[in-house]
Amino acid sequence: MTVKKPWEGRFKEQTSSKTEFFTESISFDKALYPYDIQGSIAHVTMLAQCKILSDDDAQKIISGLNEVKNELEEGNFTFNSSDEDIHMAIEGRLTQIVGDVGGKLHTGRSRNDQVAVDTRLYVKDILNETDKLLEKLLATLVKVARENIDVIFPGKTHLQAAQPVLFSHHMLAYYEMFRRDRERFSDLMKRVDVMPLGSAALAGTPHPIDRFITAKLLGFSKVSENSMDSVSDRDYLIEFCSASAIFMMHCSRLSEELILWVTSEYNYISLSDAHCTGSSIMPQKKNPDVPEIIRGKTGRVYGNLINLLTMMKSMPMAYNRDMQEDKEPLFDTAKTLLGVLDILPDILEGMKVNREKLKGISEEGFPTATDIADYLVKKNLPFRDAHHIVGKIVAEAEKQKCYLKDLPLNILKSYSDLIEEDIYPFLTVEGSINSKASYGSTAKEMVLKRLQEL
Ligand code: ARG
Image (cartoon, rainbow, N blue to C red; front, side):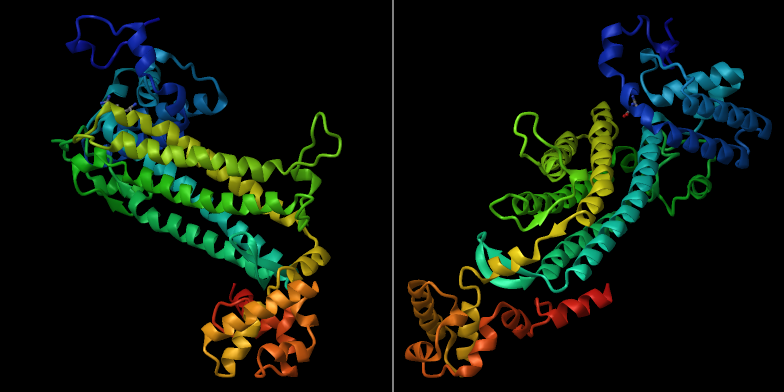
């Protein structure tokens, strides 16, 4: 059955089926139906309050919209690709239900501002959900850091043993990254929380509508200022995808570490069986699939950001149909973001830390060498000279195949007579960690202080 097009009046020929197939968005923008109906109910309510529609007509339209909503919720709605998009599908079905009065719904608005209000409502919901899930992720990191407060960890730079740190300190580094992510998402809310409806196609409308009423009904705190910008702004989607891309970069860093840490070569941690899978051929395998997939999904989220930035580049004002291409990257980003946030805390909770291995490995690679240099600096030797002396001490320990803490005092003294017995506490990994006094350092006292704040 061919559905009547709203623009039929101007056209002599029917839209070709290829055009319909190529231009439709209903196959994916149907996800916006709850927001579209919410927006329409608010719009009609406002039209009635402004005496543009009679209360009676508004009531009929609202009850019709609720009926359409029920059909959509219960899966009884018949989608038709010639409906083009969710906005037309809903209005079309409304008119079937309530008759010609349904045609009054579109007074003082267009699909251009409608799609903007729908996606803004959608992103607001996703942001609220994201905030809750990020709060849980942060709480999990704090819990893991607390439970492992005494675990020593080999701090690295260039992936080489550098200086011993507390495992909690390492975990809390991710806390800071995700805390900034949470801040970024909540910060962009103020730019999403702006109501565009009533901008109509691009120029506004001659009807005496009150956009502030619509904003209030929909829970927006602001009304957009410029009708042309209202229908062509996609910054809020780009910002959402950008914050998501940064978040995924953090998740990917963490995932990469987890993947390395569970290898037999590292053996720093193990992940719960619940989050791993086996191999169909190699019976010994236990693969960290969840972190791998998180790392892999980072690519699509970056891609979605670049997709939107490129789609919007050179976009002349105001609305252009290119913008329909914003939905799939948006939905895909939201789905990926929520999916990752849902599982990541479980992975961290299920992680078991191999304390013994970590303590042992933290001793390797002369990680307390800098502590000897700092010791000499405290005795007034310039850091550069101290660095040179310690280089020689490290070479000596390497030759003797022992740890720095095992070198006898007379040997240490042969490199610098500033060295005394009191150096030894700094040569153990615990001593090295706890000697750090700078704000934000890995010293247990400092980490405990941060945990207290959190
Ligand atoms: N499906 C369209 C989109 O997603 C809705 C707006 C259509 N506007 C138009 N002038 N054809 O962008």
